[in-house]
Structures are given as structure tokens and as C-alpha cells.
Image (cartoon, rainbow, N blue to C red; front, side, top):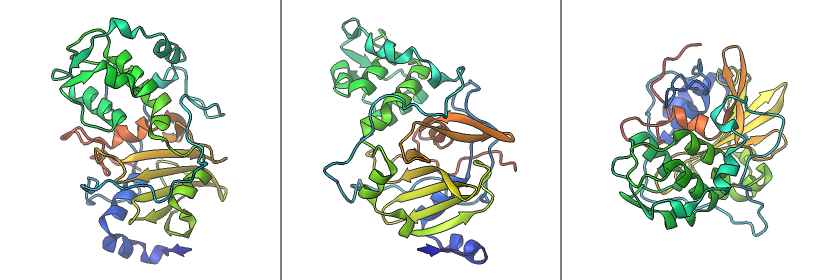
Length: 310
């Protein structure tokens, strides 16, 4: 196990490779801004790191492959897992009728193709993230249906207009919440993740004694070669949440976010600081909402332009 003392921390960050500097910014920065004019994403987050780091994930023409492919790996199921951390009822993703709307969608009433050229950039970028591909100017219904429940949720959001200007952005968020983890085939448990990417507790790590976004201390495990970064939130010395960032594993070059509960189960929600306390937020959207590059529309902004207050 390799660690960094507080004395050496500043020198290390200055000399660290790009990926490490970026991930430190990612895991210790919260969000003060929203993507849309709603109020259900936590505000008043701050930063544990100073400004000046490179703000965008490093691009690569080569998509990384997972190091191992265990034959009996349990992968995420579609839907929202039941556990004690519940979203407040007024939040977008808490809509309990969404799954029924997806199941009951009459796809025969929808156009065969959608002309996407007029669609708002914000909607288009979220659809692109969900599909992990550039959204074509002409998007076929059959192509979306091949993507299972995730694709059906996009059809629900696009609706009957074959030349949409706006999608139902809240329905897109709900589709991401319920179906993204399963569409990506993420390991359903932290042990499963370790069986694929290796035991991160053997990697270099950095302790953050005062992690503002999570209130409690955090430990950051770093493997810059793999492009895998793990952040553990520590309460009374015990890991209460494990968040993971994958860099370089998507076709679109965007960052990937995973979250595991204290019991090691994959989740689609987590705790985020709001004022002096916590609120439950949807993952990966709460993470993505802070890290969207407004100039390119891609989710690669590791260190957003925020009003940092602590």
C-alpha cells in the first residue's frame, strides 16, 4: 500500500501526471450550477483543490478495455435498487410512474426516423451520453429499440414529433437513472468491480481530511495507467460510500461514474452536501451536471468553472 504524507501532497500534485490532477479535481469538487432551470440538484458545493488545473479530460483515440472479464461476473440489473437512501419525492428521478410509462409506450405511434438537426444541444448531448455515441442527424426508432429499456426511454422523451426541437429532458434523466448502469454492464458489486479492474487498495492513495462535497474525509485511490480512480468516503473510520471514475472507456471520450454503497452494492444515487447536511442525488446525473463542457456539450469537464465557497 502506497500513500502520500500531507507534507508531500502539494509537491506530488504539482508533479503528478495529467490524469491524476484531473481526478483529484473531480472527486473533491462539487457543483454550484445546474444544467436546466430546476432546483432539485444540490447546490452550495465547494472545492478542496485550488484553481489552475487542466479542466478537461485527456482525449485518446484508443478506447481502453477492462483488464479482466470474469466469466461469472454479476452485472447491474435495470431499474432502481431498493435501499435506505431514498430520493426526495419532488426530485425528477423519483417519479414512480416512469417505469410504467416506458413499459406502456406505443412505439407504433412514433415516427420511423427522427430528424435530430433541430434538437437542443443540451438534449442531444445527454442522449449521446446515454448511447455512448454521437447522435446522428437521422436517428432511427429501430436503432433505439435495439438498445432495450434505455432506448425506449429515449423514444418516450422524443415523443411523436419527427423533427423535435426539445426532448422531455426530465424523462431523459429518468431513463439515465433507471437504465444506464445496466446498459453499460457495470459490475453489480464492488467485489465484482475489483475482480475486473484489480484491488485498488494496493494502489497509490491520497487522503483528503476535509472533503467539502462529502463533509467527511475521503481517501482517493489512483491508477493513472488504467484510468481508474476510486474515492472512499470515511465516516468514523468506516467506508460509507465508494465512488469510481473511469477515464478512457467510452467511445465518446466522456467520463464514466459509478457509485457503490457501504455494503458493496452498485447504486444509482448517493449523498451530496447541501448546506450543512446531505441530500440524496441521482447518479450519474448529479456528477455529470457539474462536469459538462458547455462549449463542446461533452461530459469531460473535470474541473468546472464554479463559484467555490467553503
